[in-house]
Length: 387
Ligand code: SF4
Ligand code: SF4
Image (cartoon, rainbow, N blue to C red; front, side, top):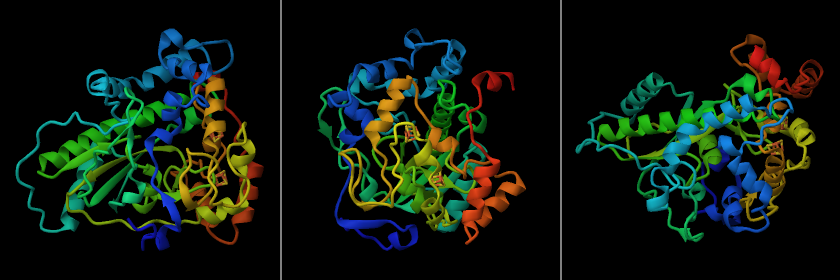
């Protein structure tokens, strides 16, 4: 495996000789299964709290019964699929393992006369399914996990994505802007859950469509490979200081999924609309993060812990601080999404103008405008329910 690839010149990824692929066991949620540093009582309560009998509903705004009721319902569909083969086959699909609930497809590949025609068909199908964003990049082994994690044995197991599938379709499903405004709250976690539920529906439907055409397709949500670098390579957006993808359409408000396939497709170009330069002068996310998990300094090659990628120059969040804050709140947190200047409704013309100017030497002024006119404060959950 080569550490540096020509695509890096387009994405701006600066990959070192000491780069190492990521092992799933080091992902912070997996560590809560085996690492005493992460597996605390608060962490267990955080995961349990996603089921109503254990939701610790309280009087605080956004943490009442109806807030947890929606948050926990928003994860229900993904949880059902996650648990289908969990007990018997040690597969936690969509979270630790790829999806396997596909029907039989077609024997012979549909004869597209070119990758252009395959792409046109895929985009038409995706539109009918309601895909938020979609792009295609080449298979890149660097972002595929080195190994998966077995929930049952707590040991590594091999990744089961074939390495002869040349294309990766990356999809992004938007998170509700109003729900995200209520963070921190249990209610705001519904934006994440609903985003992943849409991801699941899109991934399973689109991969079944590809299989029905006679091609191979492996659908993967939060498992098996790093979605953010693949999404950047597929042209969905750029990576911000908060380590999240920032897109032109939804800013940082989206959830990602990917399909590994041999369907003939055109490869998209990475997009650049000035995010990196903007992040160099902006610290709204690092200042607002309660546990200070986001660096305020320049990108670095030094990982904070095993939960960070090694051998790449980037802004790296401190996963332990972030997860402990989630556990202490008994809900996930997206404050870094709420306060990001790219968290805007880009269907409005003035926000599109802001985005355009933020990519020019006027970026400092555009940041000041954002700070002055957009306080990005928390919306009360009571107001969200009333609105
Ligand atoms: S999710 Fe919350 S705790 Fe984690 S990095 Fe973002 S702001 Fe910080
Ligand atoms: S809040 Fe500012 S620094 Fe952080 S990701 Fe968004 S634009 Fe970049």
